[in-house]
Length: 219
Image 1: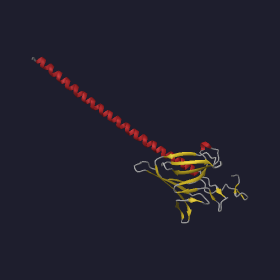
Image 2: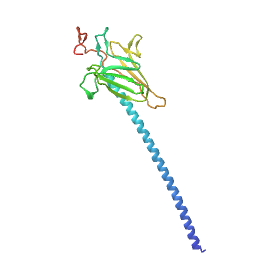
Image 3: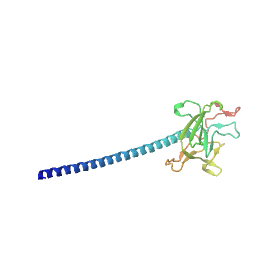
Image 4: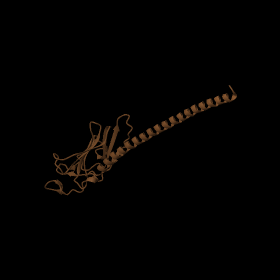
């Protein structure tokens, strides 16, 4: 075999090795790019999921804050002694408040905040101007997957001004209402204690009708 043929064979061998090496390098680069894209997609999906969870929690707190701040301290003078139409325990609260801004003007609504057996934090309401047997209720699920609800009420009691687990048959609303939630183990959601101060605590708008023992202009 001549030197020219040997040189040509060597060049062909080097060309094949270089081509294979190039393919390996390109394949590795492609795999790295694919891995980077996959990781980036997972990171973005995780961030989107966390953002959605945060928005859901914020929406629930905003709704509760808006309703509880507008709690109306309506006095029931046909009771002896008279007391505010508000019933609160550590497991839930029933109160009167204005409807949401989108539904005003409208009569007061009777709201009930509680946790159902399916682990849903629910806020229901009915118009206080309609008879109980004909009132159409609204049911709003604020959060799902809730393990526990603990509501507290701050104000004066037998032991002084402190947080209490029950507030009912009182002459005024509590000074503050605290809503505390717990989630199932492994649930990464965080619910900061929601503490709301009602805008009004005394029914100063009541003009008592001494005959009916009700506030004038109220049913």
